[in-house]
Image (cartoon, rainbow, N blue to C red; front, side, top):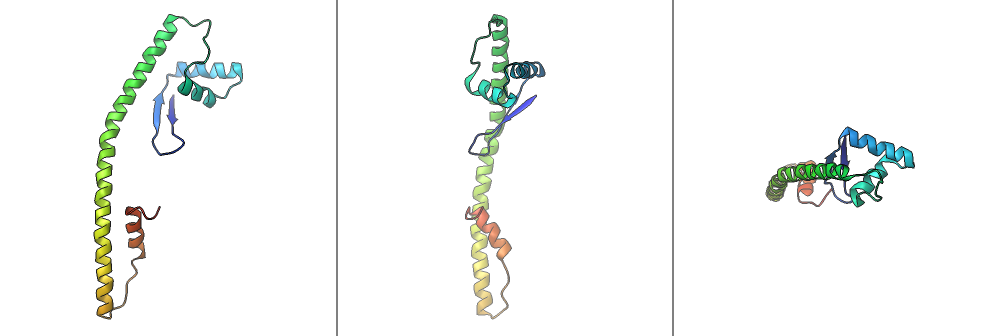
Length: 139
């Protein structure tokens, strides 16, 4: 079972893989105590296990520790893949801004020359929208 978590603000997402056995146990507990599955998973992720289960033993906690360490390793692997992509996209965005500035200058020069030569004006509204997008003026 995959669980995708998104923050209230921002676009980053984290995906957790939970074994079907663990998810079924969570679902059974939710049905027994009349909880929503999403709410229970949110409580587990944010606060850990709230109550000690009298039937829990050291083996259960050890298995949970192993599952948590496995999830942490997977998270670090994903973070390692994500960081270079974030770095590259930042520089691509800077290149796009630079190109948008250059294109804006060329359009202004073209409009000025067309006016001076008394040629008919062209519509650059589509291009100007893209320039505004890359300069973060428009959304």
